[in-house]
Image (cartoon, rainbow, N blue to C red):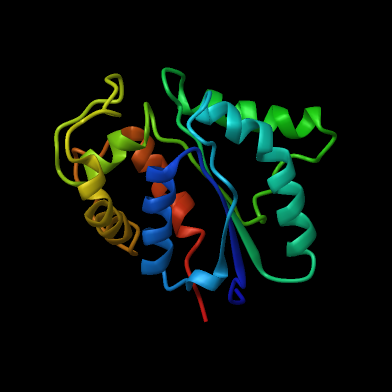
Length: 184
C-alpha cells in the first residue's frame, strides 16, 4: 500500500480532535499530512454536525483519492444509541445525497465511541467505565488525552493483547484504526 499523502479528519469536538491528532502522529503522519475539518463552535449537537458534513467529506475524500493516496477518519459519538445505529445513519446520509455507499477498499475509517469520547479516554487510561454513563464532565479528562492516544496506539499494534476492561465500542474501533497504518 502506498503512503497516504493526506488524512481528512471529521470530528465532533476538540477532545476528539486532540486524541486523533496525537494518534495519527504516533502512526507517523506529519502535521502537513492532516486536514482537520472545522469543528462546531459549541452550539448544538456535535453528532448532528458530523452527520451534516459527512457526505461532503466522503465526496472530498473520493475526489482526492482518485489522484492521490488519501484517508478519511470520521469520529462521531454514539451517545445513547447503538454504535451500529450511528454507522447506519452515516450510510443512509450517503444514499440520501445520491452517493454510493462506502466500499471496503476505501480508506474511510469510522470511529464511534459509545457514549462519548471521554469513555474511551478514561478506559484507555485504565479507569473503570461503562458505555451507559456520560463521562463528558469527568475531572481531569483533558490531561489524559496524550496517554490515551499512546495506549490506543499500542493496542492497535499487530498481536497486541487487548485488556478485558476494553469497552466494546473501543474494541470495534481497533481494526478500523489499523486500516490507517502508515506503510512505506
